Amino acid sequence: MEVATDAKLTATDRFPPPTAMTVLRTAAAEHGTRVLLSLGGNARTNGFPIVAGDKTLRRKLVRNLVHFCQACIQELTLNSIPCTISPKP
Image (cartoon, rainbow, N blue to C red; front, side, top):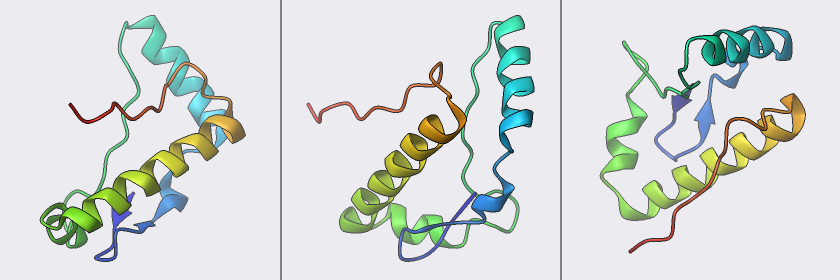
């Protein structure tokens, strides 16, 4: 996925479909690893530095990520991949 300069998530069509996620989760469990979500990469990180450098946009990005994870957990039943926000100390 990618992060736009307004903290919206883009390129979500690159997120694996449910069948691929099942294979991925099974493989991760067999190898004692976790499934992680990556943002940007290569030439797809243009929005991230802008968002990371702004407190308001950072918060908006976190909210967008939480909503995305919650939708995927519900849609793909990724119950083994928790999506929580820890309270700020």
